[in-house]
Image 1 (spheres, rainbow over the protein chains, first blue to last red):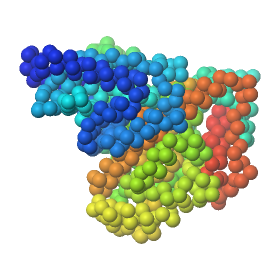
Image 2 (tube, chains in turn yellow, purple):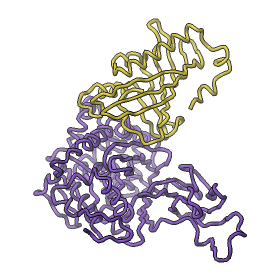
Image 3 (tube, chains in turn green, red):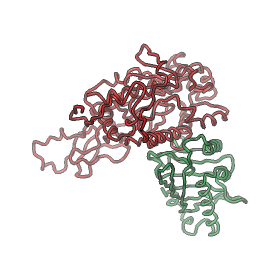
Image 4 (tube, each protein chain N blue to C red):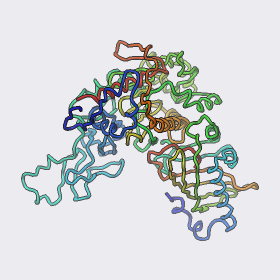
Length: 176
Length: 437
């Protein structure tokens, strides 16, 4: 699961590819993204995505499932992601009402590489969910391509590898 | 008190009285002892869908399954036959196969090293000298599932040595299964064990099924999304919802078959759109070739029908198989209030990559734990399971359309798309099996 970190270039682990200040900026950003997702702030979360060519990908069955030959839990480009936001905000989307109470912890933030303004980052999360009296626990590893802009980081590409992506899981009623 | 037979868990519940013509008692959804009886009287007696033969294409390919209560290995043996064997060493009971899928030349039990080949024969007993002549390895092979049947690549299994043939059991439902298979110009479909949407809901297994009444309400948010899109092509090989297929005024029907099978019959609603579907396909290279190949194989008239129906039988084969849109759906009951639903996207053989890609994306959009469609169904089933706790008035009403049923010459009963003929057909079979001696 932690393949991206296991396979990271030695300098990404040893000296690190970003400064200490930049590391903290990345961590604050990912914690901010997590807070927006926990609070169901869908418009503000959508505003974190940059450009027309974005991908939000949650593979199914295996972390390396090729979306061209296999099914994904989520494999959204910008137009599908906007439709997803429509549903998440729609009171008539019954799976999403009532909304889940969520707390997630983000950790294991390791910047893997820097290419100009783009930053490749690995991180992980554990998430507690309570909805209609049922508690679900979720775990995942994330792999991002972030873009550093004057307004702060933005997301261009995000892959979420859920621990249970090959198990029979209940409704996923929030963003991961 | 009912009489009990040795292989049936006895209860003193009169199942016949729980299923009336137009209503059923909600305890059959909530009572755990009913669930145990269902395991014995339904899942360990009748035909269950096991897997599609394309999941184990080569010798030694295997996949683990759960059929009723039993863990089962499905394996393509050295004679190219598909064997279904219980995953339990005949010595002291350990599972002999732990990988969920793969390829093997043999199955070795790691408790004491006993080895079985892919036909299930016991071919290796460690320390053989400790056993005398009375021990015959031939008597201790992996236990085979009692009966195995195959309908055009769909492999079914029964834990009961006796009963209806598979062919009789499927009856008129067979020609609906054909709609899926014949969407391929080579009449071949493919399912991959590692490519499957896996979901669960905290509700009873009997809730999921053919229902033409719910989409306007359960899936209202999806209709909104569709209305905003420029093109509402439902699936790669060409169905276009140019009119509402869930309106009672449409030619769509609900259909009930003998043995509890049921379908949302969209054939007549889709046929008028055949030319539009074909035209849409002609706009791409892969689509043009597909139309050409379909006509070559099935003749113009039937090819047009099949293209209009786009491989979607919308069929439920009682008790655990449904063929809906672009997938094969397997229903696995875990308890009276927990059900797993596995949805295997179906790949068509003999078509261009673009066509299967579109099918995949279309499947993903509506089916899966974070999709537009199936989560709302799961949510509703969970709301039902919570509501059923309040069983002061225990009867669930299933009488919608009971006065406007039509009996067809092939023994099926049909009604309008919002009618509950599908639920009634399923429950009549449930009652038959639960009260059978």
